[in-house]
Length: 186
Image (cartoon, rainbow, N blue to C red):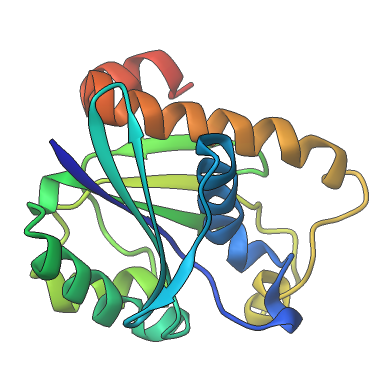
């Protein structure tokens, strides 16, 4: 069984530790745990790893967030991975900071990365791991908020949340979405 794990984010040092890049941070932690690293390949940083007999192809699109679908579509077809075996790790304003939710499908909630993926993979029927970043911003300042770093009181919690996200990805590929949702979604 092959899986495409997609960490969403933006390339470049100015975006490195921003809320919008939590997908990249989780993908990095997944690769690090497996003792592998990323190569800069077509449209994405790419890494391969195995977990309990499952092959995981991990990408961090280099297309910038708004064109993430280009990378997902390319790698999905290149590797011949069915849409239900794609897992997108995405920041989510609708969830409080630290909330983690696996969903087998769903809308894009106005997220430009998800809109792009939806447009290019043909709909909303791909699983996603939603990482809550909260919505503590004044009206009209959403872009500034998602492109800002985490607050001082949130930073100490990040390593455990990222580790839990990695556990959820491993559960997704070994136990499937339903069992993972039962076990981890609170």
